[in-house]
Image (tube, rainbow, N blue to C red):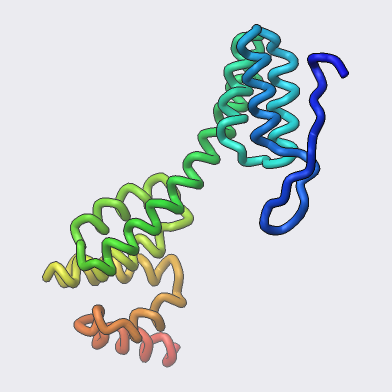
Length: 186
């Protein structure tokens, strides 16, 4: 066995036996980076990504190796892929934080996070708007609460029924019922 190949032993994760370990491949890539073996570093990063396609550290390391090798297109692609992974992870964390602030009745904090989250992850606009509807309502700004709640329902009509069952939105139930009646009559 030469210095460029490494023995892989099986390790277990929760669901299946791994015959390859992405962290191990990343470590091998790092070793090759240290001695400026860019192609081998890229190969090990790719092996790590074959095992775990959203491995952020492997994407960043691959970007660095590609840049050092002079492959700016490859470097940019890997950096872009890493940023997509980061946004997805950040989006989930911020979604959880906003929901937890709402539960803790920390409405200003929930609003701040949901405003940012709705900009960086458009797929979460409906839930961000819904939570902001609750937060503004609880802060006493009924008009803003209604505006955000209407936006949430516009993006996801199923949130209408959820809002009807939400005691924190009770002050909006009159117009919600009127909207429901109007929809049934058309």
